Length: 148
Image (cartoon, rainbow, N blue to C red):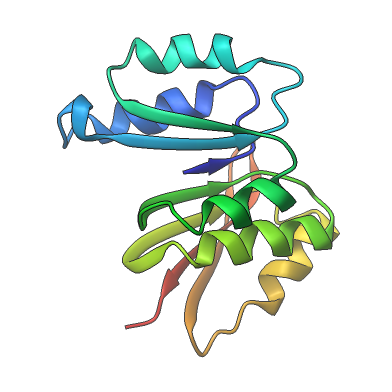
């Protein structure tokens, strides 16, 4: 699952990696974005070429993620690169955290933005392992997993 799809290139990378271990028709991708710069048809063509199952959710992630979290399956991987305000980041995290299982990895991009950083700081460490690392050309990224 990806929040903040933009041009779909990250989606392609995620799916390319997944199909190294799973048949393409078993890989499912869920993408959330306004899709204002790149429309859903354009991104859909990229995803169709990979042979995976996918669904794109168009709109404000503060609305679409909580609604979709009611019916989506648990995720193995979530990449959050949505809104940068604290309110948006919290909403994206809360929706995503409902879709976690014991092996899910959630990656949060742009932790250097004050709203995103504050959201990551507020994640309860008693329940989640949070590791922050610096990825070249990407800035600070957080990896979040449920504590076992």
